[in-house]
Image 1 (cartoon, helix red, strand yellow):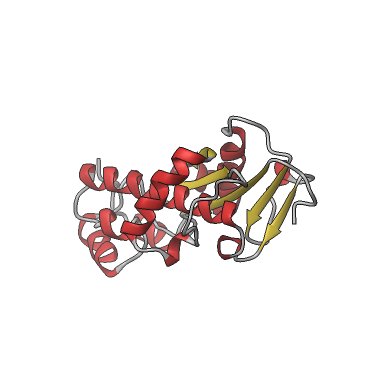
Image 2 (cartoon, rainbow, N blue to C red):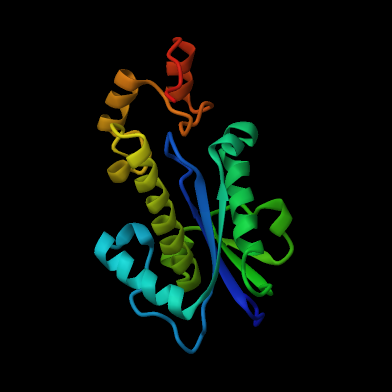
Length: 198
């Protein structure tokens, strides 16, 4: 896929769909001679298995993490914020990759020219799978920290997605500064005149 170019970095992001929290991307360059065992799409791994593999990836791979904030999501939209997080992840790599494998069907414009998309790449590329694990674990950690500061929304369990518990809390407590104002459920709550919690 990378046409003999090296090093190759896999890139993936998590957090497009949640109603709260940032979008997080990771870029990972694996050592072809020392690939961690058990790499797979982060969504197909148990939390315990994901955490165990994460430790190995962080020890053996070179990686970068990129984040786009809620404010950026609301300013430029979730797709562009995902692109921004991916670009930041690639820029955070300790070395410049010769080629990128990006999960999905769209390439961030700034990364065009030395990238290719792979639909469902986290199931087809070990470097994308590694990126998906790092991105998910990092974002889940952010949401657990935010859950302690803003209890009641269940972010430690739902990671900001619109679960029933989260939606019930929005009705009861209103929206916080970490909710995405341009996402319809949040926009509707704010439009109905409920204030942001402090």
